[in-house]
Image (tube, rainbow, N blue to C red):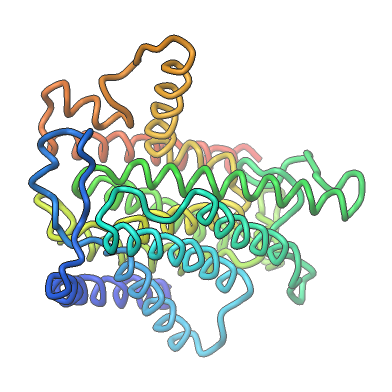
Length: 360
């Protein structure tokens, strides 16, 4: 518990006090946001606002993990390293995308091919590594079984390790791509993606703590409802570091935003969410707990598919929050209501998670 507090507090302090320093550094170099001309006109005033704030989120989270490591007096587990790798790897791709936009003063950064190649490399390497490195109890960071509240009977390795590995890589990369794009699409209003991420990772902090207290690896807690997650406490610490980092960053990212997280933060947070869902064996449950991200992404998919099929639009503009902007809703109103809905999704997901344990 002390390690969790150390991670969250350190990340909060670094993010809260480090963000204004980073803002001043970005302003001196005129690293500002480029705003799309076809977006809501209210966004034109945001042109030039410092971006790439995801750098602070990543560094703050890493600082929190270092503090927890020092407090515990032992090196991080393979689970922690994998989560950090996916978060920082996708964050680095986002940073290159943001920097390209700023340097060339356009709304498009890296070429689609370059972005896909980078994401595939990070995603595939993460998936392959995640099914290696067993601990002393012969438990691996990830599992070949598709998971909902825990591993199900749907085993991707049913036809052998090689085929199972290929199927798991495909499944894991689907999750990584979906979550990174979902967070990226949600990052369209001041504080929206940061606040929703904060809510989701608070729930994952609770999930990690609960799994740690009910782990099958400890005989005193083992029972019919115990969890096979390899390092649940490390997942809780990782989630706590993200919570602290997002909390401090939100102070400066809330409307009117002094800085945007950019693709650097959106891809990093999406990668972190994909990592904890895979490593905690709650891959499908994550779609409920992170339901606000799912709704935003689905609205964009619906708009694209319907427009290509009929030439007409379902929404005034996608993703969904821009539809409400063009309908006359204020930005702060949209953000707060989306936060509330995110909290509702998170509560439903946590309720389902706990209810399953009660009846097991």
